[in-house]
Length: 453
Figure 1 (cartoon, rainbow, N blue to C red):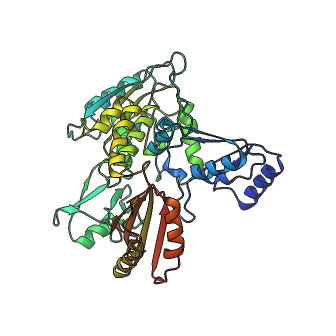
Figure 2 (figure 1 turned 180 degrees about the vertical axis):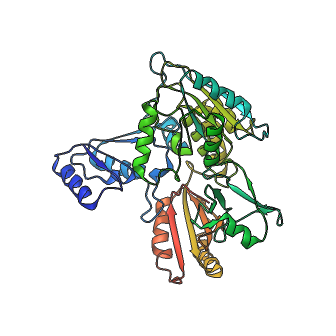
Figure 3 (figure 1 turned 45 degrees about the horizontal axis):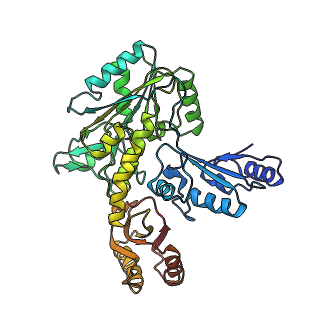
C-alpha cells in the first residue's frame, strides 16, 4: 500500500508513484491529491467523509477530488464509493434522482445505542462553561470516561473591544477583527498579521478589553475547574507539527486523555470507545455567514461531532450550547435528522437557483489598489453582460466580497448561476482569459466554488 500526502519528499512520492505504476503496490491511500495516483488497472475509488470541504483545491488549478474521481472511474470503468453521515446536498440530490446509487446504514453495531442529544440555552453566565455542562463533565470524570468539547474558535479571546470607538479592533490589512492569543499576542486569522497586545494598546492610546472565548481560554478554564484532569487541545495553533496530531489521537484512544477540546478538526474520524460526553460551545457559530451553504456546514459539523459520543456499549450524551436554541438547523441537528434538513434546505436552493439546481462560477478580482480591483471586475462584468439575457443563467454582481480586504488586497466578485456550465466554460476561455489586465491585479475564475466569502 502506498501512502500519499503533501509532507512526502519528492523522492518518496516518485518511488510510490513508480510502485503503483508497475503494480508492485495496488492500493493508494492519501489526502486530496491522492486522487491523481497512477494506480494501474484502477477498479475502485473510495472517498471517506465525502462532504468535507478540504477535497476542494482553492488555488490554481482549482479542482474537486470528487470530480476527478468521477472522471477517472468513468474512464477506467471503475466503481466510486462516497461515504459520509452528512452528504452534501448536491450528492444526496443525485441519489434521490436515481443518478447514483444510495446505500443507507440503518443500524448501529450490536449493543451500541445512539447518544442522547440535548440543547442547552446560553444563560450569559460569566463562566466559560455553563453549570449544566460542568456538572455533566464532573459526572463523566467520576466514571473514568472521556469527554470531547468542540469550540470552533481559535485563540484565547476572538474579539478585542475598543471603548473609545465602541467597536472591535480590526486587522490593519483585512476586513476582519484581530484575535487575542496567549502570551500577549494578537493575530489576524486571514493574513497572519501579528502584534503584541501592549503594542496595540500603545498604538490606539487606550486600554482594550478582551471579549469572548476561544479554545485557549477554554483549555485554561478546564484546567482550573478540574485540576487533576488530563486536558489536551487540538487546533491549528497547538499542532504546528503534524506528527503531534497523531500523537494526541493515539493518547486519546489509549485512555491517556480525559478531556479533548478543539476546533472542527476533532469533529470527525475519532472512534474512541470511552468518549461518552460531547459538548458543543457556541454552536451557532457560522449560521450568519453570507453564504448559501452556511446552514449545511453548521448542520454537518454538529451532526459529525455528535457521532463521537457513545461509540461502544457505554451510553453517550451530547450537549449543544447555543443562544439560538429554536433555530431550525440547531433543532434538526439535535434530532440527527438529515432527511428533514435536506427537505427543508433543498426547497430554498431550488427557489434561489443554487446547486444542485445550477452550477456556480465565481470570478474574483484582487489588487492592492482598490480602483484597479473595481475596474477589473467591471470590465469582466461588461464582457459577460453581452451574453444576456439568458434563459438558464443568472449573473450576480459585481459587488465587494464579504471579506473585502485580505492581506491588503481589495476584493470584488461576480457570481454566475447556470445550468449550462460547458457553454460558459468556453465563453470564459475565449472572452475572459485573453483580456489584457493590469499586472497589479489577479483574477480568479473558480468553477463550482465552495467558498463565497
